Length: 443
Image 1: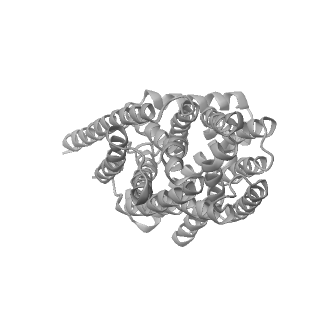
Image 2: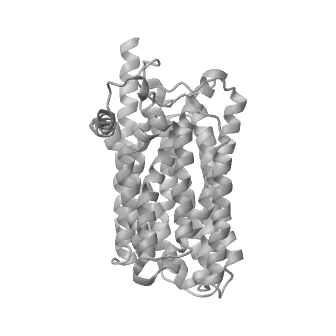
C-alpha cells in the first residue's frame, strides 16, 4: 500500500516543486546517472580519506577531533541548509557544496590544527547544502518523471534513490581500492605516498565537480528578489520555522530515532569497527580491503532495495530486513566475538563488513524514499531534518570513540537499533490506520 495515498491530497500546494521546465523523461534519467557518477567521484575521495583520518592524523587525536567538529558543524548548518537550497536552487547548491570536500582533502596535504579545524567547520556547511540539495533534486525529478510517464510515484522515487545510493555506495569500494594501490602495505606512514594519494583524490573531486555542472537545472529556485518587502532576516526566520514545525509532526518525531540510528551505524563503522575490529587483526593495510567489502555490499543492497521499493509496506519489510542483519553483528560483538588469528581472523571482519554494508544500503535508500513520500510538500525541510539528526549522531560517535570501549559502544548501538525499530514500526501502524480510516470515511 503506497504511503503517498494517505498523505495530504492537495497536489497543487505551493511547496510542491515543478521541475518540468521542458525536461523529458529521458533527460531526467540521464540526470540521475550524472548526479550519481558525480557523487561517486567526489565521495570515493572523501570516504577513503575519512577512513584513514584517525590513523594518519593520530597525533593529538587531530583526525578524530576534526571529524567530530565537521559533523557538529554539519548538524548546525543543516538548520539553515533548506534556505540556502531554496535561494540558490538545488543544482547550484550541490555544485557549491563540492568546494568544502575539495578543501578538506587539500588540507590533508598539510594537516595541522590551523588547517583542519577551519576547513572542517566550512565543510560542515558545504555538506549540509550538498545533501539537502541532492535529496530535493532527486525527489523533484522523480515526481515529475512519475507524472509525465504515468508511473507510480513511490516506485519511481524508489528506483531513482536505488540507483543513486547504489552508485554512491561504490565510493567505499573504489576509494579503498585506490588507497590499497597507492598505499601498499608497509607505506602507510610514508609522507610521499600519503601526499600522492590525496593529490589523486583532489583530481577525482575536480572531475566530479565538473560532471555535476552538466545536470539540468530545476525550477526550484526561490525568487526572493521579486518581493523586496521580504527581508533576508524574515526569510531566515521562515526557514527556521519550517525546520522547527516538522518537530510538531508526530510522523517526524517517530522517524527521528531511525534517522539517528542511521548516523550512529555509519560512524560506528568509520570510527569503532575499523579501529577496534579490523586494525587489530588485519592491520592498517586491511582497513581498505574491509571497507571495500563494506562498500560493495552497500552498493548491491542499495540497488536491490531501491528496485523493491513501492510504498510503505515494502519500506517496512526492507528496513526490518536490513536491521536484522546489523542486529546479528551487534549481538555477536556483544556476546561472543573475540579477535582470532588464521583464516577466521580474516573472514570474521569481512563478514561483519558485508552485513553492516547491507544494513547501511537499506537505511540510505529507504529513509530517502520514506521522507519523500511522507513529506512531499516540504521536501527541503524533511531532508534538513534527516541531516541534522544524522550528522549529530555521527558527531557523538566521533567524540565518544576515543574515550569509551568497544563493548560500551556496541551496547549503545543495540539500544539505539531497538528504540529506532519500535518507533518506526509504530509509525507504520499509525500511518496505515490513518489511511484505512480515510478510506472508510470516503466509502
